[in-house]
Image (cartoon, rainbow, N blue to C red; front, side, top):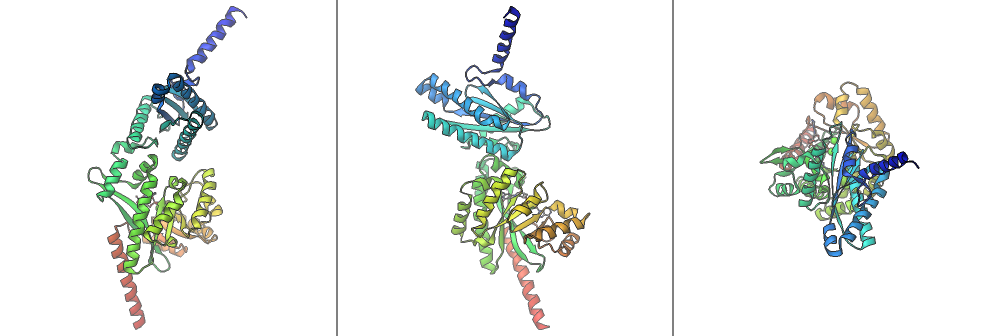
Length: 439
Ligand code: C2E
Ligand code: CA
Ligand code: CA
């Protein structure tokens, strides 16, 4: 080997070393930030190792270092297939870049990483180390590294202060939505449940209602339900919130049915993250038992997923739910890309055609009529949502759509107003019957 070759090898080694963290051997933060600077879309995930300081103090730095090296290896082994780049960010923090920007997938990935790391360390080193994992998603070349790091810190602080460990940065943090504020809004009745009737097009009567969350904040005004739900999903609060909604709605609708001697069904929106909770079905059954709500009168509205693995998983969950007598409705049908998959593969009770398709029926009625006919071939009830005009309603009726929901009939309303509406409807029916008998 001549001198020139030696220098070349030395430079290569140096360049390689410049990229690597000396303790763990994985990439260092300089390389990481350089690498992500030309990635147009992606997610940055920060993993804080909580408890290494304790290990350093009580068992010695060497053990602490060994653990950090072990975590780095674990991360590389478990993330590489996920198209990720991993680096050490600081003493107790790692950082990952993924090209995936799907909220649900990222959340799932973070949960998986947390449980793998906790378990492996517990099994091998017999110590319990916690992990706080925060993520920030960026799209369309709008990456600002300093801004992303500050968002990760805000998200991490938010998580830790609320006793959560995994979360994705969300703009709503700046709007003071927190678990605490949601809980106190529920207590003070700022967060309420509204109900929107579903009308049977044959009888023109209310046969069911969909429960929708409402937050009228004294300090921040109307907070859109999608913001509440996405915040709850991001910070791992959706299961608790979802159970509160279900329980309160079961109590309300039981009260209405008893008071008016009716048999109105209840539809509840279910977030995809709730479906993945292992106690999801048993928790629902417990609520139904406690509130004495008939499982046959409950319908769960789930939205279609874009992910094929989810589709297989969801199919099993749907079948298990159906064994309990609870019905399944597919929400926002036609909005996503997998709509037809749902008709073909799933044994669901109801499909809710999205408002955008109802609007499209104004331009291309044949398309929507064929869709309704196609769904009917699988003995599934069709509901059209977002029906706003008489024209739309009459057209859907002529297409033999089964149920409609929308401002043309009723807007979502509080329980008391719902009771009044159902009462009024009953009175007119009774009047019609009496008049009918007379003639
Ligand atoms: P979604 O399940 O598709 O609910 C229907 C939305 O359409 C509701 O908006 C409802 O108020 C609105 N809507 C009903 N009829 C009409 C109409 O004729 N015209 C128009 N323009 N809109 C109409 P909302 O209440 O703002 O809810 C938005 C979304 O937030 C819901 O969409 C659902 O995905 C979510 N959401 C609301 N409440 C809950 C809840 O309790 N749990 C969960 N997981 N998600 C909820
Ligand atoms: Ca819905
Ligand atoms: Ca919908």
